[in-house]
Length: 157
Image (tube, rainbow, N blue to C red):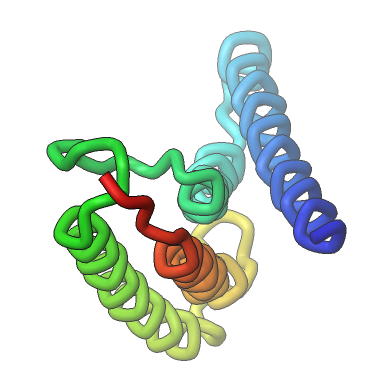
């Protein structure tokens, strides 16, 4: 359990670093435009790519903390087998979606290693790898949620 907590802190630190770099690069771009009257080529591209990194790892953290976006139309308790089954079915559907997106991310990343980014000239495969990595982590988080629902005993009503 301690390793999971440390891993979450590492992902959180990565997300904070992404936001800090985005803010710094955008401030630098504003200064370059207004004081040097010449825009830099790389800050917008870096910010866009880091925003994607932030979003995908944020998806993983939200799922892990059970804070992902969902409709709460079912009763809050899981005492009913029907409610529990519907929640598990929804999580399984989300797992299938994450697998589909992750598979597409693997294909995208594997085809993009020779494609340099426009301004920074870095291989796009580096940035696209965040999609399958975050989807794999999200899949594991969904599986943990499903296991938790299955493990909970239904209390008699």
